[in-house]
Length: 315
Image (cartoon, rainbow, N blue to C red):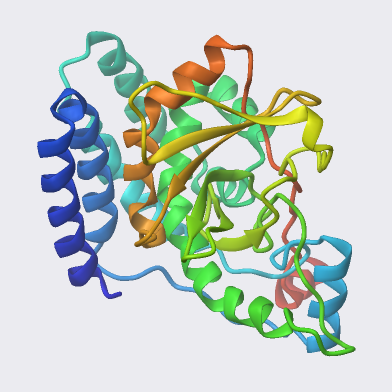
């Protein structure tokens, strides 16, 4: 979908959700503003293709290596910096004194040169949380806030790469002798853990949706995405009273949980955050029972340095 179509879909979905879930009005309103701000960027993020021969792609899928790892992917820093500024402006409209103080510090660090854009958005793109904490500490800003806003600033970049790369991954996902099938619980594009699981189609096949780039990939229902536990005796689900659309899959081995939704109409990646907000009560239910979502990534990617940059350094 183009941005205008996504904005129209956002309006329809938010209106319907606020009517159905008036108790989530504020949370949905904030999420709607953040999504809208991203969709209303002056231009789409720039991506640059890189060579990816089929045999290399097949090898990566078989070995569980996300496609972006060790590739010279271009990080559109100018786009991310502009979106970062506009997202901060949205958050500044909230009447929250503690948040305002954190945002003031963030704005001061950004305008005072304490945050180096290429480093900040490069680390956010590869989702290196420990490096983002280091950047926040050096700049004297709240680490969680910086990681959240920087992550949302590069999310459209990651989604743009996912749109390019997912068809290539699906193309090798076949039964031919030289084919391969992605079987890992983390994202085949960027290595992120799933934000949600979706049960699709009449057969209720389970798909996972990446928390970073929004990519979707098919997975086995009776396998923990985090630790690959496939012992049905230690896998289960939590019963949440009155909930019909969502459920929570849990693993007793790693104590991880995954929110799963009946997705007759899976949302575009840009709107995935709405389902996350809509199911916040399931996070509470799972955490109260000592389950958790793992931190970090399932696979920590690194980007290769483009050859021309190497040549510049050598010169």
